[in-house]
Image 1 (cartoon, rainbow, N blue to C red):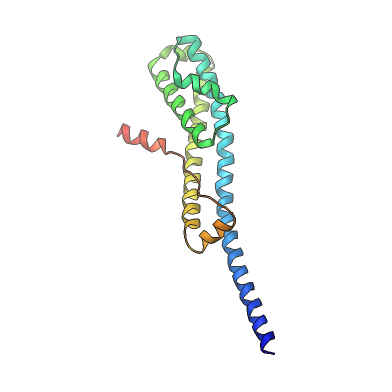
Image 2 (cartoon, helix red, strand yellow):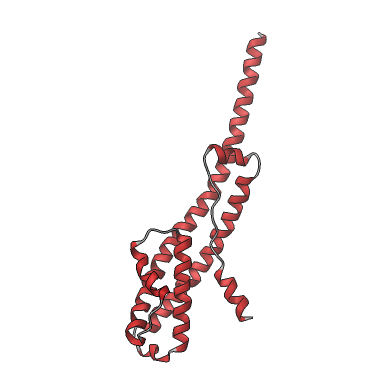
Length: 178
């Protein structure tokens, strides 16, 4: 009878611990889902931004005969496999350079499609800024969550690793202009 009682207690404890770990795992996965969803949307937005930037580069090189190392790297981007974070950084540099060239050279406004491309590019950039913020918010929550006990045990068992953040380049531009 004692043996049966001990076995029941052990089974009960195993069930309680399993439920506890499953609930922690579910919480981690729900946060990770938001991070991955934002990353997927960011990938789509970066692809659209890349296409528009390459069109702008073509116009700038044809009309103004301006060449740039950033533009050369951006044109090579299509064939390369890189993370969204690295791709975002390179595209952001090209975007800033294009915006500066657009301000400096009024003759680009004479190219029929260029102002429309710039407008589309600005819309995508606003979307990317919001996606960066969303991604970074849930990445911070995720990274903090898997760093704390007992969540770190669940993360260790499931081999979950911390995620990297997107740079907040928009914050840097705002601080420079103020």
